Amino acid sequence: MGWSPERDAPAAAVPPLSVERVTLRYHTDAGVVTAVEDVSFTIAAGERLALLGPSGCGKSTLLRAVGGFLKPSSGEIRLRGVPVRTPGPDRMVVFQEFDQLLPWRTVAGNIAFALRRARRLGRAEADARAREWAGRVGLGAFADAYPHTLSGGMKQRAAIARAFAVQPDILLMDEPFAALDALSRRRMQDELLNLCEETGATCLFVTHAIDEAIHVGTRILVLTPHPGRVGAEYRVSDDARERGSAAFGALETEIQQRIFGTLASRPASGREGRAAHAPDAQVIAHVG
Ligand SMILES: Nc1ncnc2c1ncn2[C@@H]1O[C@H](COP(=O)(O)OP(=O)(O)OP(=O)(O)O)[C@@H](O)[C@H]1O
Image (cartoon, rainbow, N blue to C red):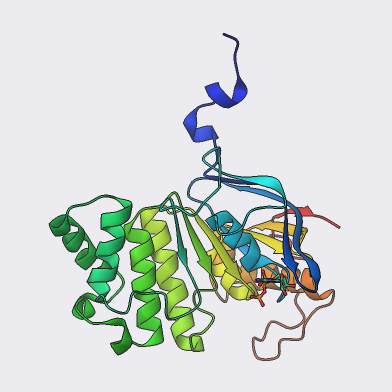
């Protein structure tokens, strides 16, 4: 038998996620809507790819397709080399909406339920791990609370704990903090970053906020306006991840310019007048 690159490649060389020339269309009564066109990217183990772009460019559609909720019109999405056909516990999704927990189960009950189904754990072990994860996201005292008694931020914490607890191949996050107030949002971004760094999780993170993409992502893929195509890709250095740093501001400006085509004035940040092109933005590709 001859050597086959796919069969004989070491497992580590197969990326957790590859999106290959994917086009996604909706068929509606009014006609066909092309949401995403000919998009390709891969995510390596431990990477956090932020999908960034204006409203309607197809970020959520792409995330839903990776989740297995939507079939590509053309192209292929592979998880560890295997084509995605259906949703599965190897991809845990955190949505923007606050109603994603099972309302009839407590915080620990929600996490334990996912663990029992996805990891086939017994009741006692699932419950112990669920309580541990509730504690890790600051909900230790609320492990026995029902979702309707929690704030929006607490519900998102519980959903994040549930997703991490299952240890999926990839975490899919669709603007999980978009409905939070600015302070909670910032705190949750920091907490998510810490969890990702502690666990080495691989993430695909959808956002329309440039600062969030830079703070949370290790790479950023900027999609063009409708239909979404890859417009540019950036690698985020550790320096740039630090809010308020020169590298952060430079990358933010670079991406703003890329998206809006002009420098936005930022009187509140005190960063106006910064160089138009960021020397340390580590641009991987400018397309189009
Ligand atoms: N169920 C659907 N049926 C028909 N068209 C849809 C459907 N969902 C999304 N679309 C269309 O697909 C395109 C991409 O939508 P999508 O929600 O993926 O964009 P997005 O970048 O996530 O936007 P936002 O940042 O506002 O959430 C839009 O033109 C939208 O109108």
